[in-house]
Image (tube, rainbow over all chains, first blue to last red; front, side, top):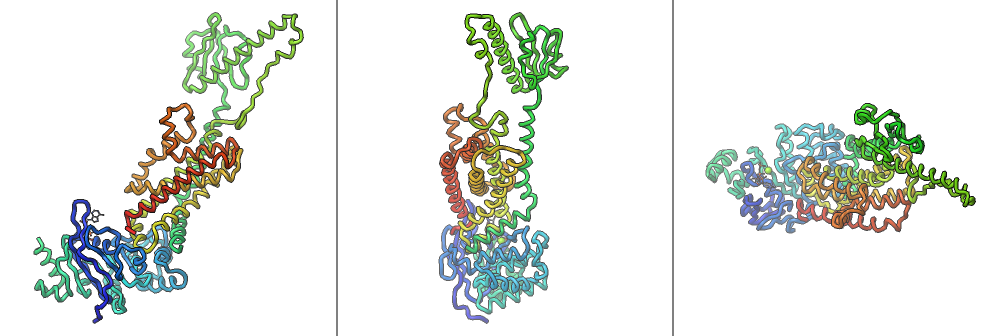
Length: 244
Length: 363
Ligand SMILES: Nc1ncnc2c1ncn2[C@@H]1O[C@H](COP(=O)(O)OP(=O)(O)OP(=O)(O)O)[C@@H](O)[C@H]1O
Ligand SMILES: [Mg+2]
């Protein structure tokens, strides 16, 4: 497939507690150029927190995170990261175009470059016809797609997507994954969390997080072999049982 | 710079789209001012209703100004309580030997006070008449005969004029208060919305500087605050006919400063609230006390430590500066100190906001 040579993002021996509650313990992950890494795990296991710590939005108690060789948190590095949160963070009173323009500007792109980026990404998520519609009138899936378009807008080298395909219909979901794979082949690094196990099958690497620990990490085939399972779904279920 | 402009443009668009909030910001103060103007100004037009028995000397009744009282005559003072109630009198007057006995309805103590002072004046006036009558009978001093007796009071006012009402006095403070209140509330709620909708987190996952975000907010809401101030002040001058003695420009600038202070305090306080409703809970704690200390109630007579509280409240400086300009017609010299302190508030809270955003992103 691709040559995994250059590490784009890494998180080393990361631990994090919220108050008394230990949410992450000793998480280590490396994401390389051209790689799609999928994070799976039960609800509340710490996937979102891992991502936020990597981005520097949460502070690690111990351990470190680095992106493009720079220690995080680092404001300037954020320019090269496309992030899509688990909740749709959109301005409901503004139109899709206005949301795209706003976040595009924040990422530092303007003018013709921005227009071109908007057109390209809005058609990718199939929202071209709704470009001038107020976001409050969007369906859940439409909002999700708009968030995705915003994340991809600045042509980032590292793309971090927290459950990007929730509420998106199967055919569009397929399109999006085709697109993610295309981005990976042009040497982007992609981190995706998901609860959809056949999406996990499409990743180059799958990290299974349970109770804030990396329970297993490897290619989908490696994981299936290790747990003696025929699908990632089975891996997930077996892992959850054996972790208790 | 792109980021600052983006925030500014977005804030403006959001305000314009939210018609209700826009109306609240621009029309509500005008509505309330109009109502207050009506309430405080109509008071002075009504006549005091006095019940008077025949035993009260004619001279005294004649000395009461016709324009301010209407007299109801009664034969005696039997059941005067019922008489007061039946005719809705403000006071009932009767004579007991050489004493005037006045019973006040006292539902509205200001009316009682007015009646009291009217009678004091009337007694004085009739005394002077008696005096003049005696003087007329004194042939020894013919030179003082005419001139000394036409006592008249000429009233001069340092500030305002004889038409000055309570509304005129509190109006400068009211303007400052409205600007403060609405900007405080709306900016605070805007930031809470930004937080609860997740857009704040999303925003801070871009390379925007925290200061750019705060300044973007400041500029966006500042613009509407300027609009609001213009509207309130012009409405007051041209429709409500409130007189502004000093420089209109100073009034506007002071209010813009107030708005910016309200903005940064609103943004700051909103970090301690988790919902719009919790933001409302700050009104009685932060906004209402400022009204008491902003000049509506005279502070000179208060205990020293109470006065000290007022030094901590931005609205007291705003009220002071606005009163200086609008009523006393003073210039920049008089209000420079107030401006300076407001600026200090502005700088401190802006700084606190920028630092406070570290809660959501560490850089
Ligand atoms: N700001 C916070 N304060 C306190 N606890 C938190 C906070 N954010 C997350 N947690 C806790 O940390 C744990 C991990 O949460 P996280 O959002 O990372 O889970 P997740 O794996 O993304 O779950 P899901 O699949 O449901 O999105 C949860 O138990 C959650 O309650
Ligand atoms: Mg999550």
